[in-house]
Length: 84
Image 1 (spheres, rainbow, N blue to C red):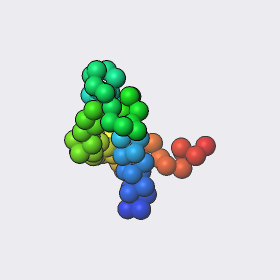
Image 2 (cartoon, rainbow, N blue to C red; image 1 turned 60 degrees about the horizontal axis):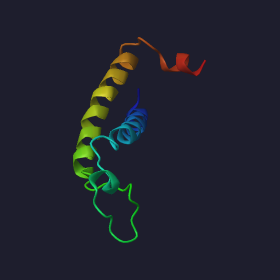
Image 3 (cartoon, rainbow, N blue to C red; image 1 turned 180 degrees about the horizontal axis):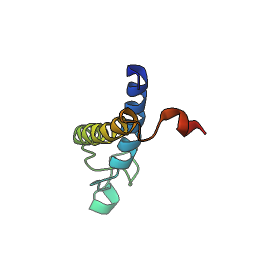
Image 4 (tube, rainbow, N blue to C red; image 1 turned 135 degrees about the vertical axis):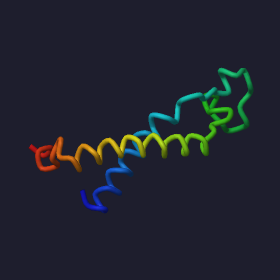
């Protein structure tokens, strides 16, 4: 796998994992019984913890990418075989 393909695969994995991690541990204003600020939706998160979620996304993505890289590197599944 070339470096360009590796970056593209990692970024694709990163975005997919981010959308899986975003809803974890979130409490909405409605669930917390707090009135949302003016102009906000009651379902908006009280404290989204985005930095922690970005860090979690990065290390989970690194583990998933390492597995994908090992599968491709050791030719357990070859990339041209995925197209057919």
